[in-house]
Image 1 (cartoon, rainbow, N blue to C red):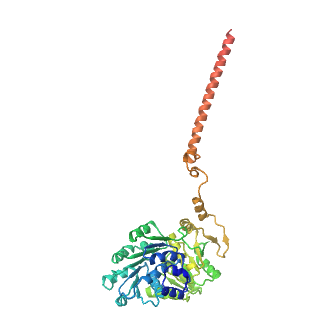
Image 2: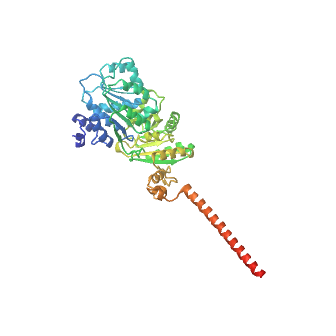
Length: 451
């Protein structure tokens, strides 16, 4: 047995044996909460940081729920990207090794006829992107009527890319009584609304909702000028000596520039962008996973869902404008409880985007020089947020009964004006009384002099 914890979670001996082969000795927190609920047939919405084990949280119960004797599609996993679908399929093959399950990744960029033949082999689990799945269904190559286990992975990204309409069409084709799991690294009101519409009696697994990035990642920012970024990047590489490093850029053109100047200086580097062919992208990722490439310059296409073991450093060559993208970028390191380092290069022009990330995520990055010397930050975003959340000890909000609260703000100003008017009236009254007294005294003196 791998662990008595797995027994308590009702994980079968066959799956436990496969987990042992994968080097997994104990479940991660998101798995401890989600797997028992899924095994018992309950719907789940899981929000957890990238690299916390959400994929295994649904693949383990999925592998146990499929009947290898039934030769039709019983489970469907919908993903926003080809790479994530293929990666998930590869992990599932390890989890279900020797169990007789037939699984297939159905994505664009692969030969359609080859996929058609494999679908006719009665695959029981489909993992794919919405567009290609709908194409095969339209051609009559597969059917989703027997799907009783449904997973929507990286829901926030599917919403961002506008895939939910196609995903909804696929969901409508499944068994009405199917079980559902939604996975996301971030949760918005739109995702919560989607969860309510797609699930029944849903268990919400929200790990550390105030922490968007796992604690094992050291987050650093380095100030530089735009023209100095290449030199600073090479200086960081020389000082850190990374095992595997991802360099994220704001666009594919920037990623190609980074790849070009690092290559010219003799670094073992390659590039990954959205305009590359699927075959080329697969080749690059294979080399990177096998550590045949030390540094990978990438546009944000590689920031979502890719689990590359051994990424020790992430460099944000450009500051992302969306805090969610920052989360997904730095989440490529520090995965599965390992330590990682994420460094963000920023120029004075990018400072507002850096502050936006810190403010939205409630973090304060450690500021360093390219040499690694710590610099005191002028602004402490996280400290401000913490102070704002602390209970008030002064002012009107410090007491339960506002009638007994001290005057503050406009009330204090109103009190000052009232006091000034009262003082003015008192002064006028005093002057009037003094004048009347003087007049009475003068009249008395006149009467005495007339005698």
